[in-house]
Amino acid sequence: MAITANELTDDAPVGATITTGAREPVTIPASRYTDPAFAAMEIERLWPRVWQIACSVDHVATPGDVYEYRCGPYATLIVRGDDGVLRAFQNVCRHRGSAICDGPASGLTELRCPFHRWSWDLAGRLREVPSRRGFGALRNEDHGLIPVAVDTWGPMVFVNLSLDTPPLADFLEGVPDDIAWVGLDEFHCDYLVSLPVPGNWKVVSDGFSETYHVQGIHREMLPIVDDVNGPQRLWSHHGKLEQRYGLPSPRFRQPPSDQEVWDAFVEVMGTRVGIADTASAGAVPAVPEGATLRNVLAGMIRDVGRGNNVSYDRFTDDQLLTMQQYNLFPNVSLVVFPDLFTVLRSRPGPTPDEAFMDMLNFSRRQGGPPPPRPADIALPAGQDPPLGLILSQDAGQIGRAQRGLHQPGFTRMTLSREECRILNLHRNLERWLGITPSEITGDL
Image (cartoon, rainbow, N blue to C red):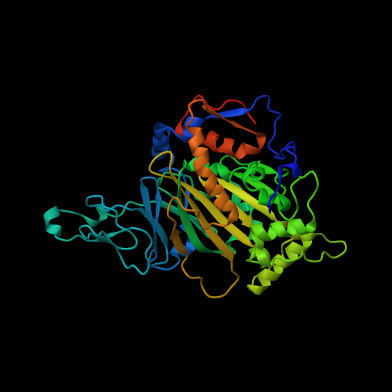
């Protein structure tokens, strides 16, 4: 659905609840997105010390399952042991440093380095060294795999290269309790898509930390989402947005008709109401007296759930159509509806101008046989990614944003109150990287 400029007003108020009557805009150095020295500080002081989502529980559900998670130069192996225990290790052979595994594996009974064939059991204990006599008094207990902290929340596996770290539950602060009503444990991962993108990892994360850009690159969404009155909340490290779907943006001078709202909903998220092809959307469904189109959409979501042997009866219409989006420091956004759960993750690439944009897609299951192992899909660079309308638009903006950040006259970014979650990211980066005094000016 095309939205023309004369249908919208640009002076709609920003509805973030994080407001303090700021007297001047907040600005942040643009060099944080382009400077190799800043990226090197992140590699040294952030990524080896912070909890990160590595994969889903479904990637390592069965003994012998192994998943390799890479972030910058670091590689971690997440392993389901013969005893059913989940462990993680640095992906490095204790002989001469070769990586032990490349990518995921299943059905393993050992971890064997392909270079010189040292091997470890699934608990990380050294078990075999070819031509051991040549090493002298080499003790197995001194050469186990290097452990990595690992824990789970719901269907997600987190790792931390540092063992001297607070527990994951402490790091997540109040986020798990805040979203407990959804029941994330019922979700299982269908696939993980990874796409190399021409921008800094923070450019990727920033795009999932504000809705100010909806009226810019996602104009198809405007008939179906309130992009103005979305309450936000900040914890110490993390942030949250609530955003209501199924009703039009307040930016419209003339509210769209129910037919226009229906057409836009089908175009953006038709599968939620059982329509995969926008051409088959047809006329807007009848709206009973005393109800709204939003009530009708919620009923259709429940019907789709029943067809998949999933009940959404415990959720209200508003819960079914209000997105809960959580930004987990430093690089993850969780997009949550009762019938939809997506993890959006960014990772640093080989230079400050490169990153990886990852999407883990989950679906809710209630009973039935265990789901198959998720598909892992690595997309090539430089092509239009098949990520769906909205995420493809997000991916297409990354290179444009990164090119602009390199212009010599642009030295500082300017943030609005709505972009408080981006500011929170940078405040925490300063804490983790030891930047003092602060390079941020102003306050939201």
